[in-house]
Image (cartoon, rainbow, N blue to C red; front, side, top):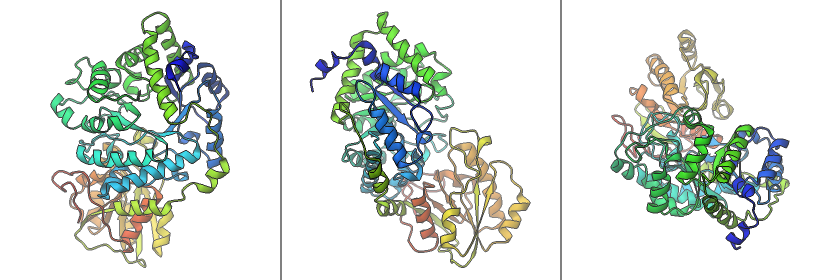
Length: 534
């Protein structure tokens, strides 16, 4: 298709709409959102767990979205694998990126990328906002953690490249994120504006390397709301930085694809910039698509601001045309210039057809990092006590943590007598814990840490429990860095994910049905070197 000729059929309003990615609430498309997509010719839609009920419902939803607009919207979802899976257990989850690296086999990342993308295609989703190619070089990073493959750029590149290959072979579009790197932050950009105070030389050698190596292998990329003072002294986050989004990305990395901003409703930008500044700075920096994933009112506001800036001559229409040309080229490549219709029955029947592969990948990731007490395998006839904690996603306050067990569903399949105690993310009742420990032969502690605060709260309690029962087994269901709070532990395993395929693999290792072969793809200073195993 002749893209410039096709663009001439679009009005300014229709071209501006292509430069937005929007989200919404509900299992069906609200009437007002439908009208906005049609009227503005919105280019992209992102769907979340809040939009998902069943396979047939999702297919009906994606078919509905694809029927709208002059140019059909392209549908994306955050389906990274492991912790971040918007479809829960409905579609392929595999393990987290760090879990994939823990297998030591980049081919496993390709299997995961292909498996995730295959299920997305069945559901009518056109792209995954993955892989995460941030280098998680700060163990206390509150938002990345196991979402990264490693704390070392070479490992990130090797595994991300194969994940990309797996996604692309299915015809689904991957999105590299979070450019130019969120792995060195101490703040979560959902909640505050992080700043990375490293030299430009350090930045280029660590954070930027995966994007430099992989930038020409993807058609989409997502920016980070992170300030890099040594790279751009303006104090603007990367999303709004002309140097980072322009000179570095377009000239040095030679990225020719579509750059999507991270959500403009995140506090990092929402609390520091006006809507007018967001639009003006993002477009001037070089963004092609503005993402607003929650509020229709805010989405309309941003859209109208862009239109007015062009009409007032503050943004040239040629600048809009540049982004729209990139968007249409990408849509043409992935077949989005024509309507798509998926079969709900096909999705119902064929989702998760490769559970054996999922299990093999997850089982290969389980890392036994310390086994000083010889506690593994655990006899199946023992009275097993399992202690977990209330769960809170990284962007949700600890006070809103919910009582939920990730292990209870599988525990009964492996042990004749298994009981779960869920503790609050606060000072617990140690008397109750002492009674629980005394009433069981074996003790399994399963922290789930996504933030430094959750890690500390669980780690301090684990340290006390180990005084009661020094041969307790600790299995980290998320960040493997938990052990920093209880370095005296005798038996420690890293699971890297709480998804069912990983939990099943964990119990297979615990009971001796399978040997743990995973390696630690990050360094835990003073405790374990990178690639350690017991």
